Length: 216
Image 1 (cartoon, rainbow, N blue to C red):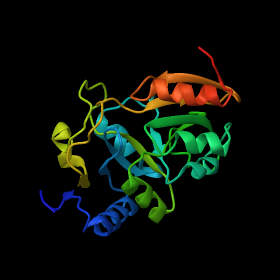
Image 2: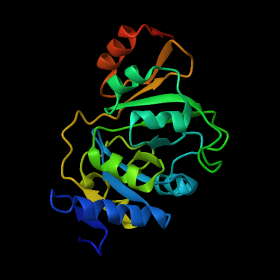
Image 3: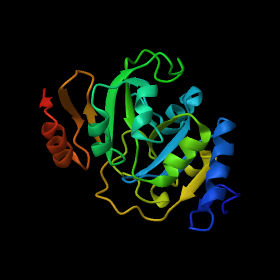
């Protein structure tokens, strides 16, 4: 740990410690910065998601996504319109799938928003934290809203660090520097690309191979 205990450099030997520390912070309503397969994100429990808006200076018209431990967890928070086979082809990976939300989600999370954006990154620590918590996490990228810099290193969000309760540092993320590809799947057998992100071509190919058609 460094910086008054806020930064924990991840190693093979301290993974359990990192997970337990993050879970403890989350259960206190804190914010944790953590690595994914695309960018560094910031997360908190769903009832405290307003803290992420305040930290990022993010307008409430821009909903947050959620981290889940596995593709099968999507059915617990959304009206899944695709087969489990397709879900497992897309996730874990750099793709965010949007479905109609279920009323089981806390009212404090994205109030007034009908859909929910589900993310299962190909980054085991995120899944392990969610699994140990037994609940999803509100999530967004670790930068100020509107910033042109996508954070692939903790050095890219130094301005936010004093306000983050714990930072899990996994070094430089090797990626294109783009966020995940976001796909609207609220209409059965249809898809719409909401954000191209880093995996648009592969994602569209997979969706079409399962018989889904694109809508503009």
